[in-house]
Amino acid sequence: MKLDAKKLFILFKSMFMLSACTFGGGFVIVSLMKKKYVEELHWLEEDEMLDVTAITQSAPGPLPVNASVIIGYKMFGFVGSLVAVLGTILPPMIIISLISLCYDQFRTNPYIAIALQVMRAGVAAVIADVVINLAGNVLKTRRPLYIAMMVVAFFSTCVLGVSAMVVILCCLGIGLLDLAWSVGKNKMKTKGKGCA
Image (cartoon, rainbow, N blue to C red; front, top):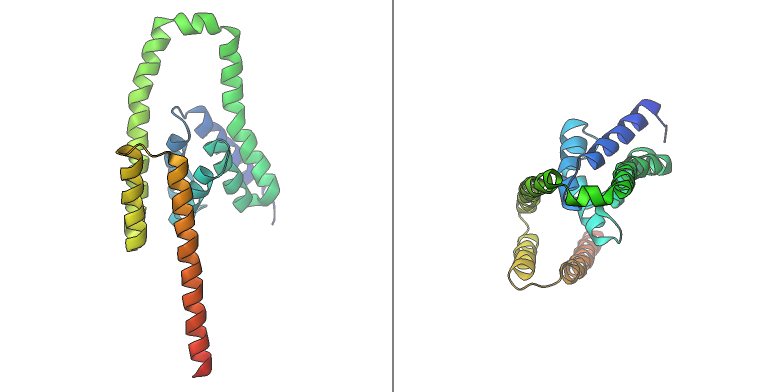
């Protein structure tokens, strides 16, 4: 895989900017990454971004770092992963380090408290956008199993209060069973054609 310094810098800069401007956790950055890497740079397909989202949510660790590892590796291999992770972790490290120097003043400042309250409204809107986009992508598959899993997962977490980890593990198990069934079905078709 040929390394392109200009594209590596674009990867670093975009990860740095996304990480620096993302408030509200991992779900917010998924929407911004989709806009950047699928719609603007065309480095990923819509389906690939869905896969990245599923993997990053299922894997341990912070969602933005997990996503940056996958996107960086897909684009430029191991070096791309390092560059993307560096771009992702630098902004929070810098910001938290600065805040820790003047934590007492920061904590009691009424203007900062108001700013954080306002940011929550924006974060809620971005998370709603992520949910709508991901749900739309699941509906586009037109697979009844996926649609049913989405509805049951939503109902389980939002209404019944089931842990997100339990829902993710159950969906993973169902997905693996579906994959095994599809592979077995394809093998049967191949054997049937071979006999004919």
